[in-house]
Image (cartoon, rainbow, N blue to C red; front, top):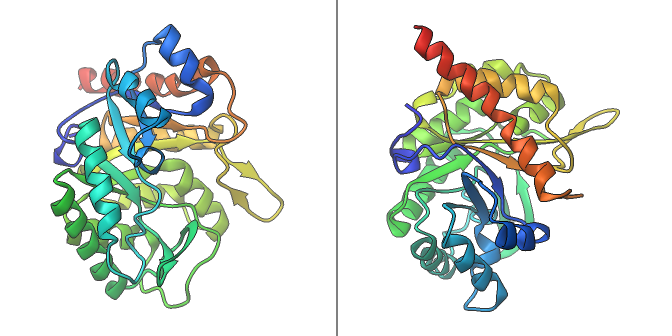
Amino acid sequence: MPANRFNGFTNLGVGIGLRIPHYDHILTRKPAVDWFEIISENFMVDGGRPLQILERILEQYRVVQHGVSMYFGSAEPLNRMHLKRLKTLVKRTQTPWLSDHLCWGSVDGTYTHDLLPMPYTFAAARFTAQKIRETRDFLEVPIAVENVSSYAEFHASEMTEWEFLSEVVELADCGILLDVNNIYVSSKNHSFNPYDYLDSVPHNRVAQIHIAGHSKYEKYILDTHDHPVLNNVWKLYAHAVRLVGDTATLLEWDDRIPSFQEVHREALKANQFRKTLHHEYVAT
């Protein structure tokens, strides 16, 4: 089940995000890493150091692209120039799938550079799904959409977040990048059971899983990606892999980034849950 058409029939193991502070270590030490996730927008350029680094990484590692600015939920049409540059990068990396967020973030050509939550309505689901389908058809690569962490909700919503996610991916016939940390953060901010979320989404569409650290404040939780994964998120991850199988997993660590070794050790903690799942399969 984990190797499916939404992740190019691959099962890549545990990866980490490719970040600038780690470039020298990776290129000189050549650590054993299953795969790297890159932020597409950082490499959508015509030349220079970013592409030089990327070419050296591609010589040794599998790379998967993750985007932060498609804004499938924004009202305006897709940005064709952005799509053309993205397709050039897709061809360069040979990414087995491409992910971006189920959100909006732009109005009339003005970009917020934020991942804003959507109203969970059937009309929004249909509109968003159509943009995802158009993107997939243009890029000719499987698409997976990620659930975002949120801090506000719309009164206009007609369903829960997990029902909306399920509706969109079924209409778009696309995959899910299941971010279990985002589910946990939103569940605390909006008072729902995160296990209900995991139990309800279409498990056969999960192409990838994200894990990350978050920060606790007095009245809310913030998705900060600046320290290790908290225990409650690991528990949620364990439940997720029981439901969806041994799926490609990525640790996000984007602020106050420690040494490569520390980030990699944290990512590899996922293996204990993947191994437990394997033993359960063998036992049955």
